[in-house]
Length: 44
Image (cartoon, rainbow, N blue to C red; front, side, top):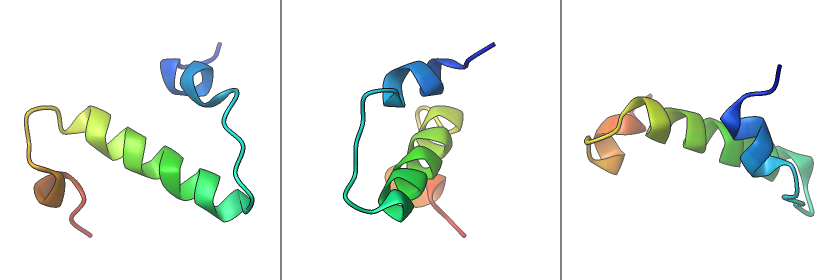
């Protein structure tokens, strides 16, 4: 079973695969932190 994220990123193409991986991580974090500010969601 694919997730909604897989469906959304299916047609995304990046010149560097690392950018695609980072974009996926960003979207996962944003989806888990709905209602939070971007700095709060992206804390390391």
